[in-house]
Amino acid sequence: MMLRVTTPYVDHLRQLVDAGIALNSDLTLDGVLQRIVETAATLTGARYAALGVIDRTRTGLERFITTGVDDATREQIGELPRGRGILGVLISEARPLRLHDLTADPRAVGFPPNHPPMRGFLGVPIMMRAVPYGNLYLCEKGDGSDFTEADEDITRLLAAQSAVAIENARLYEEQARWLRQLESLNELGAELASELNLDVLLGTVARRLRDLVGARIVGVALLVGDRDMRIQAADGDRADELRGVKLSYGHSKSWRVLERRHSELVDDMASDPEVDGDAVARFGGRTGLWVPLIVQDRPLGVLVLHDKLGADPRFDQGDLRLAQTFADRTAVAVDLSARVARDALRRVVAAQELERRRLARELHDETGQALASILLGLHAVEEAKGGAELRVATAMLRQLAVTTLQDVRRLAVELRPKALDDFGLVAALERLASGFSEQTGIAVDISARIGDTRLVPEIETALYRIVQEALTNVAKHAQASRVSVVLNRSARSVVAVIEDDGRGFSSRPEPSDGHGLGLIGMQERVGLLSGRIQIESTEGSGTTLVVEVPLQ
Ligand SMILES: Nc1ncnc2c1ncn2[C@@H]1O[C@H](COP(=O)(O)OP(=O)(O)OP(=O)(O)O)[C@@H](O)[C@H]1O
Ligand SMILES: [Mg+2]
Image 1 (spheres, rainbow, N blue to C red):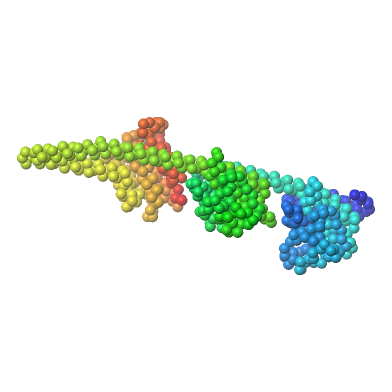
Image 2: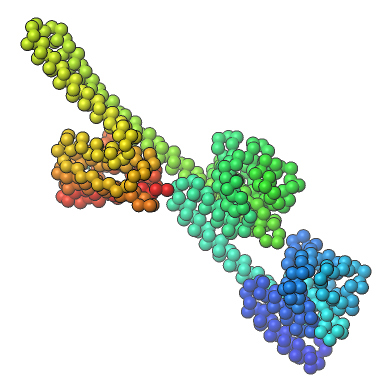
């Protein structure tokens, strides 16, 4: 390209150098594109300038940045040009094009209504490493003359500079996006590691993934058994309707993806016969991205994304990679949470088993023995000779029957205090405490401020059992004279504090042959309710247990 150096050219070159510096000082792509358009208009004296960014199919435009047309006019024109007519020629040929009257060209398709009249035209491609990125369009020189070869030259120089600035801005944005993704992935990792509630966990995954990729909707479907898959969590448009939806076996993309264990990108759901029983397809999704959740070769479910937000609803390879990273982490977390739940259940079952064994032993040793003695006593009644002997034998029998009855009642209460179901936690604890004081001689103060509405049964049972075990420990280990039990309820949680003035303990002995499981059992119960327990004890100065259970 030859530049004729005349005075206006020196001015232009200076402007061009300035433009280059300005272009590279803006780091957002939108900012850079807008500056390019404005600089092109200034350099050539064009009234209107625009920059069209070519879309992925290389047949149309995905963005159109303009200057010279005010907002009101733009609104009146309506939809942005898609790249047909003369603009289409520039896209397909990627060569500069100069026209005296663009409306007179046989390839023109005409302007939409309300479009300002434009005739003089100069179009120049912006090439990025030999691939067309977009085009600069200039219309209507201010003085009414045609665009000159000099205008073309200067615009080509600007286009070359623009390519560098666009590339820089893209790299910068890409890097910023990558950093954001990395941060988000790190945060997700931390959240997944500390969250055991599956619904909360999957909700977090859906929300974060949707945020990062920018999708209309993200769902997480999990296998239930062999032939059942349900959307367990969803985020975005109509998420509420999606949650809980069952994906019909065999007739949906999700099932296919799960069977093949391969992620899939679908640009047009309507023309993919496998997309059938998929819930979003029914709601009118256009594109989809499916990623299987797999742990050690075991499929657990599928991550599903629909409709990328923005001008182009299709997902790209970058989105796929990101979704796969999410899927890997989610699969591990889902697996872990299932294992923890199984483990907790197993321990609860083991604790129940232990409790049953203890009760069986008591039934055998105490109640069984007592009933055997009653049988013997009956024998004595039968054998009794005379009124006095009979009276003594019956009195003894009555005494035996009374203590046995008390034993059976005590056992029944231990199994499941009726008061807990009938009158609630506080009444049940008061009974427990008075029985405890009677048996042990240790005074118990109960103070409860937990309002009149009942707590949910799981929390009532857990708190009852914890206080029960704490009192048993006091009787067994503390040599205390007083115990206080304080319950407090706030909007968010209920707190129980059990404090004794006994001898305390410095370190907990290792559990052995079925003993030493009381405190562990408490921790487990509280853990299942997502609560916390704190055990404070020093030798010689009593023990305090603080239990907090959240109310949601
Ligand atoms: N209130 C307390 N005062 C003093 N020591 C206590 C108290 N509570 C617990 N301990 C100590 O902590 C240990 C562990 O208690 P934990 O309830 O776990 O087991 P355990 O009572 O020994 O057996 P289990 O409850 O399984 O029948 C006890 O053995 C005891 O040494
Ligand atoms: Mg105990």
